[in-house]
Length: 608
Image (cartoon, rainbow, N blue to C red; front, side, top):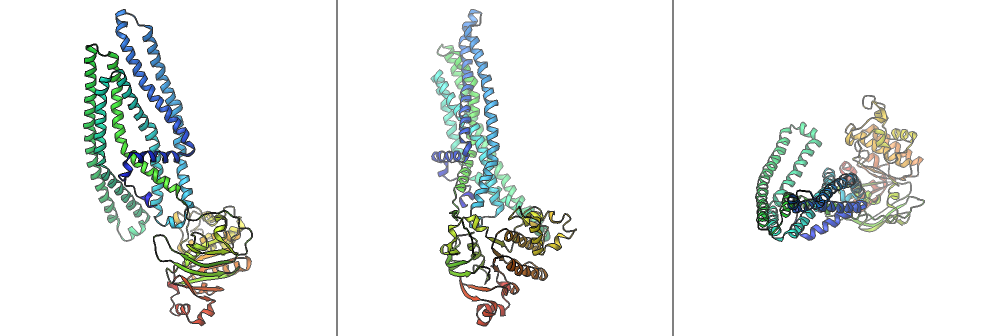
């Protein structure tokens, strides 16, 4: 994601081959709409040609006009030229309005809704390791900004930039064709002006990039203040947060004004050069016409097309930098969509499952770290067994659970389910075997019911009722003040209307739904850490009941002794390996690390 984050335009990205590569990437991103866009572009180029044929017919009319004046009658040629002009103007309008614009609108609307969907799909396929590199707000903001920029690029590039470029080229060819002397006088200053503008605008790149960086920083300050508004208000830091935002916005305004004023002057100087060349070519044309070296129609053609050419040049150079920046976004979006997931899905069906898990000599190192979290780690989980993982903070308890659930793949060693390597199974079918209750339960902005049935939206009312009862949520659902609409009450963004304990109970109810629909492993990752004693006892009773009713295994990461004591096997992890294993009584009698932790009442500090 680092390439996607960085928006600085390098020297390499300013070269012509970068533009060719970027255009290819952009065409790839158009997907099924690529051919339609190319057809529209071809039609637009045709329209540019028509828009130049019209003044050329105007030129022919003026070439024939002196003869008509002397004859005191309009010739058939002039009549047909006028009819041709009118027909071409109507054809141009019909093609542009009825075909091109309608098609373009449909394509733009399709892509602005399609690109976020394929980006979302890719992000959903990538591992937690990828997502841990950057906070969600920045990630979503960059994707949305990237998609918006590509829509703007589609319009700027195929509707304005390329057609205008072709208009300018065709116009230069026309002028050189009708009179090379006028053409040279008109054309040479154009290349001089474009060169001056290009070289001068390069000097603005660093300042533009500084402004963009400050804009992103200001957005971060703005969003963080809103997200943490209770903390801001609680410590009376409103003025400080506003001052931070004002300071960076004032800097942005100063930088923006400086660049804009200098850029405006540059455009003024270039405009003067182009208008001087335009006026000079007209004067030259008049001189040549008076000396019978060229026709009046040629002068008329230069006048009719010259203003459009000058406007095209200004627009082309002005939009060059913006198109270049959007191409950078295109390449990084393409790189994101080409990102290969860390976890390969081989798609083999699992079939019937007994439920024995073996972790054999597993080692795992997080990206950008050198020391392994787990090193030659081994353990076994038998069917219907409850296992507890105990360790100091950072010893890899949660990492082990993530490896077993295949949120990550092992660096070396293997994890087996019923004797088969879990990497051979269909990823999504395998993950459905697990019902996970995390310490920090993710709550969606929706109703209590929608959050509970999230794993299986077709869950029956009876299953929902059992899940609510098992997770000790009855007291919340029956509270008319807290839940005026019962289970359909909205819980707010990230469950803001729920307490920490209530969010964990929702997580337990959600896991219960998964167990009722086929999951055979219950993962409790500090699942009772925010519960009061009464609720914790109820959850422990639920665990006992589940083990009696369903053929499930339980893996518990806990700091509360009451939960750990329930386990059939306790694995004590130290330095990335299993140091001790056994039940509570056996480990106490060993008088080892586990006994020491219990004696020192250090269990509460064992969070991963």
